[in-house]
Length: 90
Image (cartoon, rainbow, N blue to C red; front, side, top):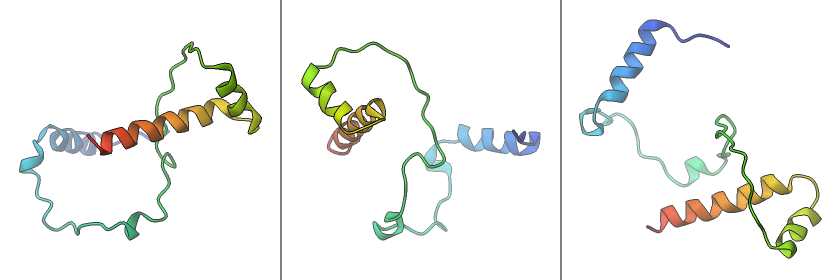
């Protein structure tokens, strides 16, 4: 893994400490839906996973498993979609 040079780390820390209102973004063009049409969630970012025990109705679990391997990832995707939808409509 490459280490971030100290100078860049300090610059990033200083920028992170600034309030958004003090950051000049006037030279950044606005984005459109079309700009994001090919975007993929999680291509470069992988959220930290946390192991837990959860009780799910047997028929729901069977439905998830019936679609092949990766039922836990499918469950996570469904929950993430619901979370993002809820956040958008708050």
